[in-house]
Length: 511
Image 1: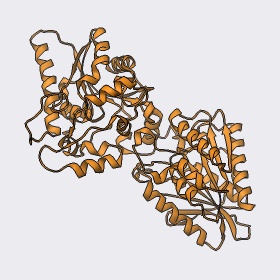
Image 2 (image 1 turned 120 degrees about the vertical axis):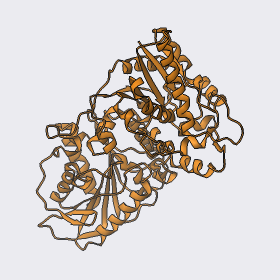
Image 3 (image 1 turned 30 degrees about the vertical axis):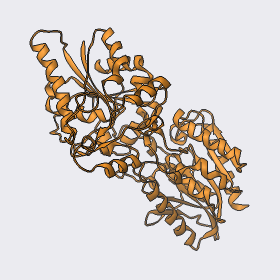
Image 4 (image 1 turned 120 degrees about the horizontal axis):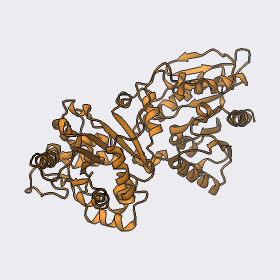
């Protein structure tokens, strides 16, 4: 049997665990929900600083009390499973680092991966919330007020949370002491020796497949998780599973305690990551011309000036990814396919390394397009932009104010709005709002029938908006295709979809 020590996230206290704790206790497990100072625990005197170290001490006190109970022969258990939800993973890992011999497993419940020297605030996805916290961090005892009822979704997906539970969450919420978010976490490395399980709540857009993909791309922190001591489990709900799915969460925590879950596959010569698999079509060997962050594939025998198709990779892509996206077979395959059909194919690298980088990536793309249009071999009045996956929000700039030379905009399996786990990325990057200004700009959208539900919802919202304003849009469906179907589903249906989409884009360029 296990003893579960549960550490809650921002603004919340032990009350959020009540239903899950009851279900765990019914199985014979011991459960302790930590009352963090100021968040369900004792309130400090006015003007007193409460910081991350305060909350680490709170968790240590519970760990030590469990150890004393076992040492005195009272009801105890054989192992401690330390569960941190949201912000709670930071004091949990900090405590585990100091009691690594006492902890059997750390469970990261829809949380980040705390790093030495990094404050918990860095893990908050929403840039606006981070900035608000920094602005409020003035003087001893400063705190961040809890969100209003409709503001919880900015701190994590509220999918599945009943109205009554959301009302109670709001009523019992406490101001978050800012020192808990801004004080850097100090780790010796001992916590890294403790087995861990990541529980991903898919309602927020997270998944094991996504973690594997980012590890494959070279993100150092995630690549290090390809270890036998690290497992992953999924819960099909939002960021608050103790409120939306308490029974399922209890079962998942018991599985985590037993060491169950999927392991990441290490990147090695025996396994080819999806983004490095060969393009699904035979394409001509058109040579690449590199200029800065832009590559051109120019038809060797054609006489110009020629139309151009700019292929915009998705993301976020870790800055450490090698090769960089413009050299991925999927992008070079599309560019050579376009060149084989008489258009200049263009790939580029842009700066979408995190969800905070959309503005930088938009600037990179705009500069690349002007560089392409200035090339004498390119017809500056016949350009198409073709977006993939996470670059979908970048389409908003071009939909909202389409220039006359933009003859077509295409998007493959796009993410057309911020996923819940991303926080807000700004109204500028809202294609569903921008499409009303697209006018007669032809749009081609390639839709994967087996898309993740959270991504498919953003596409459905965009298509509804496009239909409402009468946008000129063609949808190319791949019913049995997954996200990045060209790499993971190299079927005849996938090949046909690529041909159909390319024919449509080139037809609009030549119209």
